[in-house]
Image (tube, rainbow, N blue to C red; front, top):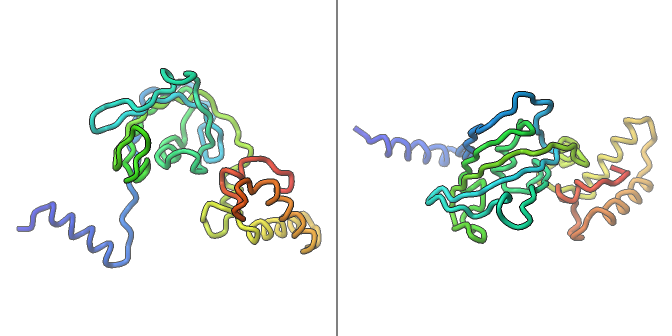
Length: 211
């Protein structure tokens, strides 16, 4: 009789060999407190204000607390644009202001094999997170994903040009390639902060009238 551990390993090997992909590790979410009233839930593109504490699952060591360290202020970030670790982007969706969650995040959705600062490599992390406030983001996640035709989390000149062309046609204006090119160059001049030839998801969060 084949041991269960061997069957599990063979099953995983078969997925790889047959060209499939192993499922991505998930974030374990535990709702510690939920308010009686919830007027809106978080979605990608929202700006969130949170207080949090982070711990190593291996030994319970706390590596950071916004309640106790630094200026002791909560922190703002935009959900869903990789401004924070993937585990936060996944684990803080559909959350109400005033809600508190405990997230258990595997290394692949945290700091991976590299680790960071007080966090050793390949560490599973536990976060205690309280959502203080939700605000509309400067731009929506959906708009960025619509423009990001190849899903590489950055916008090329071609992608921005195609978006402008569609927007002009949608509003009944004739296509003007010369005008589009001038607008594209102006957009990249103002928004491509690191001058790498692309507008990243983070750079996209800053408002620009043409987009």
